[in-house]
Length: 554
Ligand code: NAD
Image (cartoon, rainbow, N blue to C red):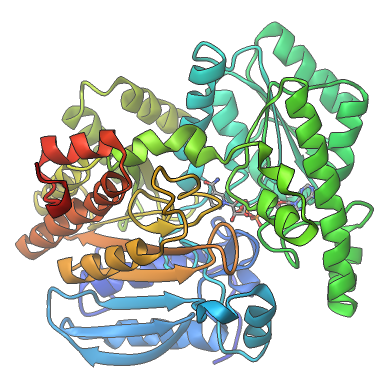
């Protein structure tokens, strides 16, 4: 029962292993999260984002899969931080699974307390889509990263990163999307990564072009690519806290500078300067406090160098890993916030339109089904040129990891339209099995995270956490297939509360009703949240598209 499983691959095809497609989809997506081509460390149940896990331990994993297989179509399974704790009778259109991960009463919401309880086997860090079973590999973040770099290019470089050097660190589950997103925007990209196996994974999956183990060689390649205006991504083996100061010393100043190490987690996510991976693992175990102090020393050097490079003209932003928050809160380095977070800088106008990371996976396992859905997207939104460009590039450049999947950012109204279209494709047999539709927790109405999604809100409501709770409750009432409410994703324990939902298109009329409600209401909460905060664009979207907001009536 406690046995670790190796090489988990999601079931594919039309054959059910559960009593309905909603349970079957939850089962397949849980398995898919732990597929060795998808997860970063599947043997430890770690999917991505530092220690983001899919189930608390192997016993819980086996119990979840068994319970999903016996779960009736009017029952709901409750998951408490990765552990299946109860099955209750609900009704057919209710979610089949409800998930709460890593919550702590606010006074106790610290990493120290979390680690203590984790060690006692009482909780689990679920990140965003790890513990809510809708991670689709690095593709899940590629379009968001692509859009972020594209917006950065529009604001600072006349719309293209051609002839520009982008530097970042961390080529893990999410950070691994950066090289591809940068080259899709035409850039020369240098990604500093301390773990060689992570660079190899990005090269093998086509996300990164070249691996270098020498700084001289890496600089030569990216500078040449920049000068020639060629798109090229280089993964450099090294520690960012050492390499970045060295770049500064040599006056190699990036045009764009950011970071995606797992800085949110001082214990697991950031290797201090001077340590091998093995030495880091030992010190972490033998002297955790000393280790954290070394991590913070390196982060200070890292952030100071980012600030210096910003002064020298690098467009610098925090990429959602709470790097700034760590040195500000632990080392009093408030000037870390002199560079902005990526949401206020580039993403908020999208959120005001209810736009966010709509994603889906083909439960058939057949890539051809994704080609059918891509075609449906292109036919439904012929006028959206950026979306067309994205889908074409994704078809060409993205290697599927695990179940074939796709992501694209869609707005309020568009998501429901697409959900119904996908349900029709299933009903008519245009695809070979049902399609599962979900999203990242990083979305318009589903997060409270003052150092990331809700940084610098217009009305100062950054830390108000009622919104993700309302989002989760509304998605439950609307009949999503599964709904999750997590603490600490992205930026770490104490810093965020966020919700997720997944809804299955199995071609039935019931699925149609559920999809229409969920995919309308879910982004609707984002329009509501931003209109409430005083964003005129969100108010306009609400008025034009009929989102009923009592306090915004004339
Ligand atoms: P991950 O843990 O899979 O990868 C982090 C990588 O950083 C690892 O490969 C690690 O070896 C590397 N690393 C650690 N210390 C380093 C150092 N000193 N120098 C160079 N490399 C180092 O995490 P991930 O899933 O890629 O997420 C990265 C961060 O981004 C997390 O904090 C996560 O919460 C956050 N995140 C951002 C977004 C976004 O949209 N921007 C979305 C989700 C998560």
